[in-house]
Length: 233
Image (cartoon, rainbow, N blue to C red; front, side, top):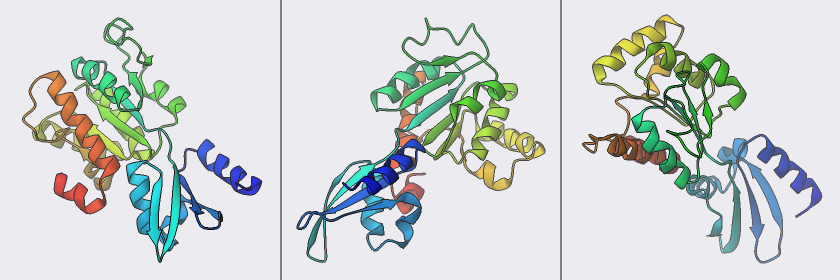
């Protein structure tokens, strides 16, 4: 790889922006495509498909065999609320390769004994969230049922372009939440981004089952193409 290409690639990775290096296997020629340029690239379909899978791979286009080396940021999961569902969700997400952080100002809940090997921040969202640099490769879930904790956290997530935002609660609860958030400056489009009731509709009852439904919904948002996401919703 040329030093110029390597420098560009490292800059994208440091900024947590995806990029793909395309190598022509016949002659070794390489080029770097940044995520912001995918839409205008002749290989946009192939690039988007490989990025969704998060895996490098070989493709054949117009008789050429090309190796697409995918560099995607490690996905993050920010969990607001150190509750029973979170106790099941955090290790499940870690097993799938997510960097997980649990935020809850209630120290009785956010304890190392309840969340071994999970980073905990026992602070209010306005203090805890800015240093986390929440971004597009972050899934964000609000699980406390306490508007004083969940609402400011969700307002932060709206600003950070998270690929997934979910919140616990019934449709009635979510309708009230939406009105509160709009009263604090959220737009209808922001409210529409919240997956609520959270998780895929699999009939989940126990905290562990709800965690499975949440993780499945997050995975669908990360991996499926747009049309398939709509069908899965």
